[in-house]
Length: 390
Ligand code: AMP
Ligand code: MG
Image (cartoon, rainbow, N blue to C red; front, side, top):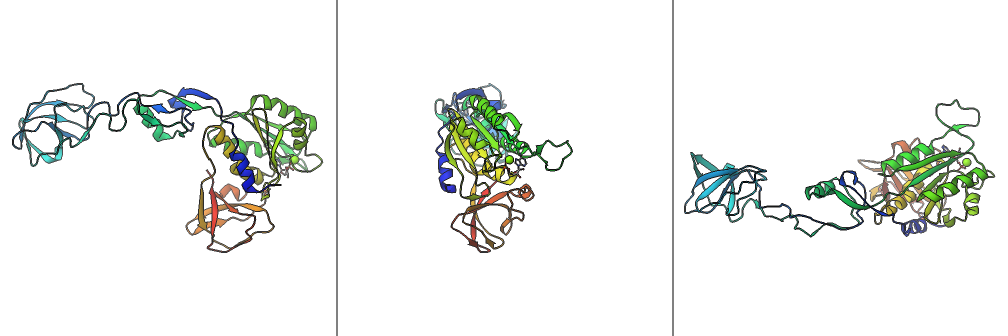
């Protein structure tokens, strides 16, 4: 059995970035760049007006002759003599002779005469060509996670395709004879299967896709066969249940039979002690305890990190902050705890019904409070480590 810290270190050292692929920018949200992107153009591509007003070439006094107009988008490129001005708008291409732009609000107009109170300083209100970025400069670095702003920025540079790390393919296996699908009437001893749909949802909501999802019986041969098939075509297999020490827990035995290399098994934590992580070839396998809250905690604390690293992100973990505890908490036992919690105005509140079998409070939690192994009594008002749920 290893500590939370040791287990997290093993996950973070997983060196399994996926292939590089080129995809349309329109589909790139949430992917990580696998190469630097160089700007194909100057941005802005021309000296650009930052105001609605007048572009002028300095004259003697404060009166100018208006000799034309350049709308935004127009390719007009009038020549200006000293003492001349053209009407101009935000985003218009500025005539190359212009010294500055004066904003409309600071001018008066009499026929074709423009009157100003003071001379604008040189280049005022002109966004110079290439001010944001010049042709050939790095727009975004390899390793950048593409967010909406990055998409807008790249689209503004005329980029249509980007090189990114592929998202890993992921399959899920839920084990358990007692599990039935919703829609069936429960017989004595049965419960509804909930981990598959829960894990699918958390995986999808974090920007990944599920290749396939299976529900199998507690059966040694079926467990081996299913895992064996999936290892060939998946970067990740996430298994729920059957990893404990019961007579019908076949996942551990099946993984050993299939020569899956164990990276760790069992972590000194609550919930989720019997978590397993292993590798076979290109495939990483997580076996999570079947208790639903344990499964989900383990997903957030370990599996999600592994998925994100595989997809090219660096150092991913849940966002961490320290908040005062709303009520005193006494930890029982010497394992680290991940407690379902809610951030409120006064701090962080540990919710009731913490059992690993219960999702009741998890459903309203927005964070997990991490209490380390060696910490037992946590006073009201004391700062505790809070992991934000994405
Ligand atoms: P196991 O890890 O297989 O020993 O299961 C631990 C507990 O979680 C048992 O009470 C199971 O019935 C329950 N459980 C296991 N898998 C699921 C599942 N997919 N959905 C709901 N509960 C489950
Ligand atoms: Mg089971």
